[in-house]
Image 1 (tube, rainbow, N blue to C red):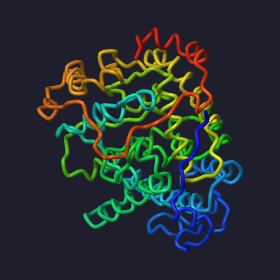
Image 2: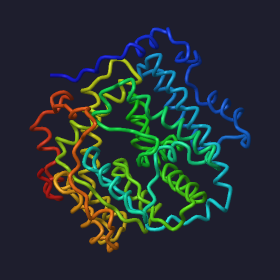
Image 3: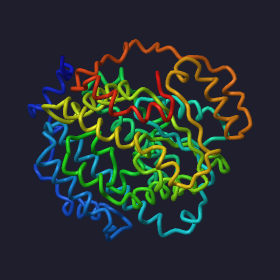
Length: 405
């Protein structure tokens, strides 16, 4: 059995045939220099682009042209995606020169990390219920520097809704797997995209050349950008004094860099049986890539995530130790417990971290889907996973963290 993309809507087929003028991509090739030049021309306050992002952007552009198999509609969406990243990056560079932004202290954030599809999203959204917490929404991570007033905020929400809704409207199976919204809590992977050093590109596109470069790249600029985004949002926050809560599985690859950026952070680490993680995340990304490209290779996606997950989980304990983080500021939770009794898990997180109980968490029960979209359907075989290989690859992780669900 192998994974197959779902049937395309009639409008998607028409757009890819060039029959819908509003979705026709520009004929220009992806090129970092040209994209930057256009972004600077659009800007009202920047006449240059910070050089640390040029190399990753150019590598990504070359991979888009040579490797990504973009459809015309996917190319159209990607052109707009890169324009948005560059426009916002120029604004963030201006923010980096303002003491009112850079003097902002990001104090003791809660950071949810763990393998993809292991409960990070559920924990993140439950922590967002606490009025004492500050959890960025989708529109804020897409447009952190361009929302100076209520009018620009509404424009940002509208633009974010369009961008986040696009993959779901093209690859309709995505709604069953993971929902995205301009006003829902958003993972902080998107904040790192402004550095052009991000797994977000690999999630959306087949870009193995870029993926290989990112594996060995210095991630310090990505985390500096992450912090700048939070500082920018905090500098405009009408409700000061709340504790930041962010999440992303990608932090597993860079825990020392994460803690160097936020040395007083509190970590919530989620765990799940790796065989289930790999099949689920591979299904998610195969469906996501199908919104932008033809000929999505499910087995290739599976092999990439097997290598990535094997590396991050086998080194998890060592990376936590090397970060210098006090073990008392790390809470480990399990997917099976999150599914069975999320309220109990949240209350234990609060108790272990020494936080005061939150009344919003007192009545949490197991959630039942009522959106009519059905269950996420996938098998390990769809992505080329072999049971014996998975047993051997993750034996040490299972033993170290008592993972059995």
